[in-house]
Length: 437
Image (cartoon, rainbow, N blue to C red):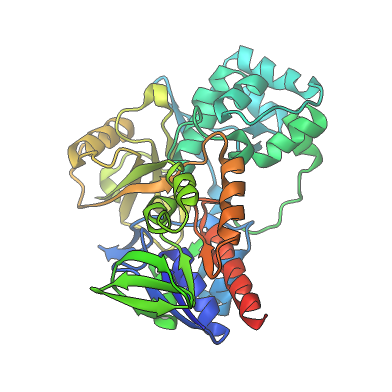
């Protein structure tokens, strides 16, 4: 069986690997494989062009990495020094300990926190006495404000989720982005009670994991294990025997097509074959991202860098939404005589000057950086907007009715690297099972 995988990001490359490993004739098409994931080494610093890590609690990425023989490359974040600052009234305030995403699970850190007013602390305390109820899908802002108040939206939910999803909690779906907490609301009324009842014992492993020599190591290894053609597929069309794809100026025949290129790119490709599916895919909105990474001599940085970095809530924001202090978060990434700041924004056009001015203001920096690199990723971050669950259910149902066709990627059931690997693995299993039948 010949399989064409259109899109060579982590989803497409993983799918190609799993299919090839199982003896199938799979080809990945992408002019720039790896997507936003990649690594560079500057001044002895290991820097990422896109995602820098994944949540360790989701096992699928690590399983793939170990299967590829890269287990020795796995490394965790420096959780012994884990702390995050949030900008409040122009100064750094520590994010309270015991938070699970937007839900406080420890009383005293919240009571002592300078991040919230006493009114919000009171709202968090009495939230434990809510009665169970089922609500229709609503925005994260509405969900969090209902449970903890508007201040918790502005200084907790918005900065935390903006860095992960690159979107506004006013638009993001609570059912899709915070499904466990929505379940707690239905079962217990209180998301605090639900979280505390379901609280798991610490596993002893780091919260975040990455590759010791950069995420690009994973991409390079996957590329070496698949049949890759660095060309862009212009069109796909059902045929009597399966599918045809138009690439490099001519049509090629395949038995199965996997679209792993993002919902926004998949929509026009599949629309001629299924207009409604194309419409549903096009309805998934996307935002952009921009990463400015600045390197300094450590002696030029007055701050102790005693945290993973900081978040900038919307009321305090100029150019930077979040900043990782790379040498603190990851061991072995930054030499001791240097400091590296990874600055994130959803404005793809943010300039070097704007990002640097903001960083200088927030970090009291006066020296010039010894290097600055920029990575811009337009329309790269799918948004799980209100109604996403119902939309994806219809997408899945329609895609399943098309013979020899699969959809995978981060636009549907999870945006993280482990979610992408899982979607690729499940698609490869379905394709293999269909071939056996």
